[in-house]
Image (cartoon, rainbow, N blue to C red; front, side, top):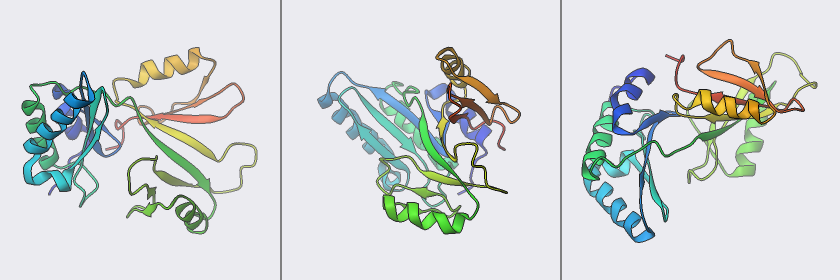
Length: 213
């Protein structure tokens, strides 16, 4: 299965109400009750067919069904995933929408990544991915990635949040954070990411898929 570029993945599903976020196609389906959400989930699984186990994750809530589609063998989006998103959208009558507000990652700055990674893996009972990041096998908690430091930086925080949002949401999200007392620290690598800080200097990054291919 050929892995798609971020641009290709985003373009392929944008008009279907899906968004490309953190190596995954994501969408939601609104529901009026838990019973309706369960029925919608059954419709989605039926539409996915034999592709469900390898490509589909579902989170059933009382007011919506959250969808995530990714090829597990590559941990990326392929044409199979795009076609699956199309089938799901058609099966639910076009009700898919960009309902996932953001996906969080923890970023830890480290001088010796190999030395600190085992601690976090053991503490959180996470699995190590091929790229050296850590992830929750149950997909309930944010993944962790490690940023290489060249020298100690005691003057700044060494753990920050990466808030991955749909690319068309990023400007409004940053504006809201600045209006709430934050400030923009760094934007030289936008639209891949912007660094924001709270009034005391604690940092977080607003990130999108753009500017990374």
